[in-house]
Image (cartoon, rainbow, N blue to C red; front, side, top):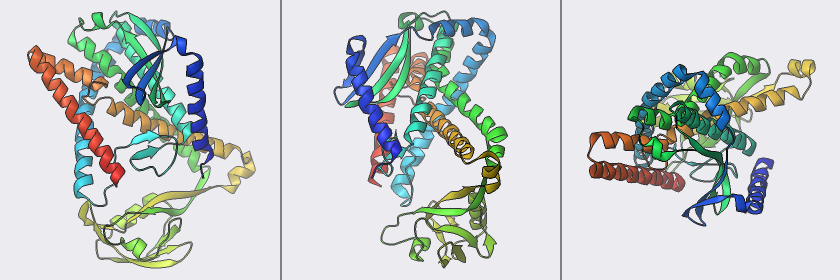
Length: 398
C-alpha cells in the first residue's frame, strides 16, 4: 500500500502533465528518445536582472570564486570518476556490496537500483538545487559580459514529465570566443554552487540543528532495518534469529543508545568473537564473521538505524506540534545536503550532457588538435555513460 508521500508524487506528475499540456503553445520540447525521453522547456527572462545586479556588485569576489570553482570542479570530476569505478569493482567482486549508484526517485521504496527520497523533501530540494545551480551559471556569464538569451523552468520527461529543472541560456556564439579560464568558470559555477550549499548546510546542522535536536529527542537504541544477503546462507545476526524491526539495547552488558555506540563497540571486536545481543524482543548469541569488504573487520550482516522518541519535557513545555516540525525541517536539510552533493558531483562527470563534459572538452581542445580532441572527448564520454549504465544495471540486479 502506497504512503501519502508516494501518492503526492503521482498526483504531482499528473497535475504537471496537465498543466504543461494546457500551456503547450508556450513550451519547447527537446526530443532525446521521444516520447520515452525528452525535456520540456518554458523560456522566460526571470532572474536575469538579479544576475546582472549580483555580477556588478561583487565582481572581484565572484572572479575568485569562479577560479576556485574550476579547481574544485576538476577535483570533483576525478573523485566521481574514481567513485564510479570503485563502486563497479565492489558490485562485481564483493558479494554483499550495496550499489552507491542509483536513480533518485520519490515514488516508492524498495525499487531496485533506485534511491527513494520522500516526495516533499525531493521536490523542495530539487527546486532549490536547480535554481541555485543555474542562477550561478548566469551570474558568472554576466560577470564576463555575456548576454543571457533566456532563463526558465524545464522538466525531464520519461513518458510523463517527472523531474523539475531550470536553465539559463548564455549566448553560445560569444561564449566559445571567451578565454578558456572564463569558460571554465562559467561551466564550473553550477556544480560548485551546489557544493557550497552543501557545506553551508553542514555548518547550519553542526552549529544549530544538532544542538536543537538533542534538546528534543532522546536516543532509545539501534533498530534493525534489514539484513545483508549472502549467497547460499545467512549472515550471523539473521542466522541467530534476529528479526527486522527489533531494537538493539545492549551488547555484552554495555547499553546501546546510539548508532555511534553500536559501531564503536563492534569495531573493537574481531571476526570469530561471540557476542551477546539484547533487543526489545529477546537475546541472542552471535558469532561475528569476516566483513566481505575487509576480512580483518568483524561483521554480523545487519543494517541499522537510530531509534528515538521525543522528550516528554519538551512536549509538556512547547506542545506536541513543534517537535515534529523541527525534525521535519532537519530531515529536509539532510536531503538537501545529500542531493546537492550527489547531483553536484554527478554534473562534473566528463559526459556531454554535464557541465563536466563541457569542461573536459575545453581541456581536450587545449591538449590536442581539433579532430583528435573531439574524438577523445566523445570516447571518454561514451565510456562514462556505459560505466553509469553498468553500475545501474548491476545495482538493479542485486
